[in-house]
Image 1 (spheres, rainbow, N blue to C red):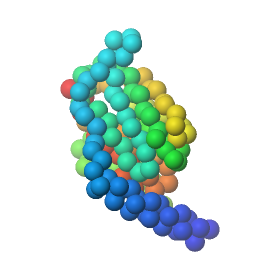
Image 2: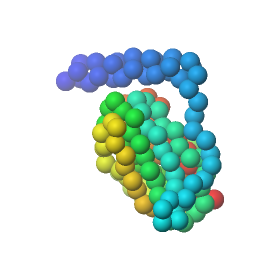
Image 3: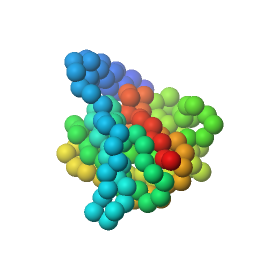
Length: 152
Ligand SMILES: [Cu+2]
């Protein structure tokens, strides 16, 4: 059981190492411009892949449409939590997932896991502050699937 979990983590780490090499080879992160959705809402564009999240960096407070594309190949989810005073998110005892229960009071919203090649849409009303966007599938947060969104 533990052996299987450990093997899964190792496989993740190998995947992360390969991803890091590809990133170093010249991929760049997303830009920071604001876009408007069909309804006139501010749109936060998110790109998720194994194992990285890039997203719009700043957006104006209010009704926000989060459009997240999963480039896969794995399923990914997306959680949006308001970052409090703590610089780090609390981890569960397993050491590889964020403690979502502890974050419930500051959780703004979430997209359930969605498949590679698909898009998830989330409508939120966000007040000014710093938010962390992350995927909490086993090992994905530690693998680098998190980014910060500033709402001003
Ligand atoms: Cu993920």
